[in-house]
Image 1 (tube, rainbow, N blue to C red):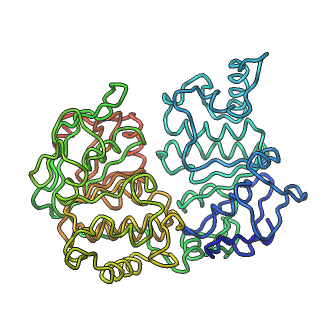
Image 2: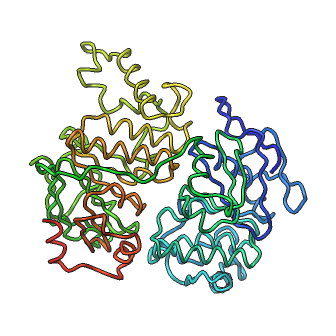
Length: 510
């Protein structure tokens, strides 16, 4: 990619004169802060966006992609961070969507199974082509996304945050399979915010900052500190020293919580825990094991079948989302675009949307626009939100900056209980560090209770005071002293390899 520039109609410069190269049989890391231009550059390569300037060459031949179909035909595949799958269909049916083999006038299911299984076996992906997607683990579903590209015989494979929801064991397995792809002639672009993974897996690192390349170097000549400095222009200290928690009165009581899905299956099964003033309780688990449902039940986003949830002594059964917020609950949701913000509304409106009826933001019956503008500007400054102005539609911001807006709103709401569900997913190292430190600071200084749900095991180990691991809707482990737990041990509980006894769980929870 030579001299690539992309400027959006609002004047935002996503890429400026970017020259980017990938060699045969190479695993290249593409890293940078949120909004640095990584995704835009890859969308241009994959035919999803068109640059104003620049040229693309594959094997020395200039190409012009009008859409992803043309990019795939030229050997470029992209595995997106969020899975694009039909859960009720089998693996093979998902893999061949758009290139379905036909026998006569009908879909040839057997041919689809054989071609999918053949590619899976060739690259040691260990996926059963006949299984339904809904019966697979998250790690296997990630492999299905890679299979989709390989069945189309791509030579260049873009992997966008492929380990974001994987356990350490699943990550190690994926790394071996990525190395196998390289050995068999594929070239890989690996986008990740996890610099330790970049150092372990990749041959070379290219860094984007503010839409420009700030460096490209062999991994053997780098370390995490040097990469983070290239990304953000300063050293980022990722380890957090925090004061020991001194829990006071109980903020949240959850007792024997049971949630049932639309198929009548228990997805949360007799989960009990407390959260006290001044402490952070973490929940770890592979996605789909009930932790998100617990967070949604506490915030009123889903009903629960049995059990009780009490916030500051008040039972929330039957209460609306707004009534629960009025009890002093703030919520950073797992899906920032669906539940966390209103995309068409401005940065300012998203920051103050939950409090425009409070006295401090009103002048009699009217909104105090001057006070609202001042407060929004204060949040933009404090939380380092990169935007053109407070009036800019939030959808125009990068994912990390959208997350900063949501965090700014929830952290300044005056809550007594913060539910932080995947608060740093898909955000860069600098933003992650800021969010984590502010969560700890608020919890300690303002004597609030915090629930942290995260797939990032380093995050839950660094930030949590006590820690729950969930597996198949149940509490598989409960740790009083998080400092003694390793990521590998957590992974074993998350995968169901190990489980604590009910007595051990009760002792840790007390």
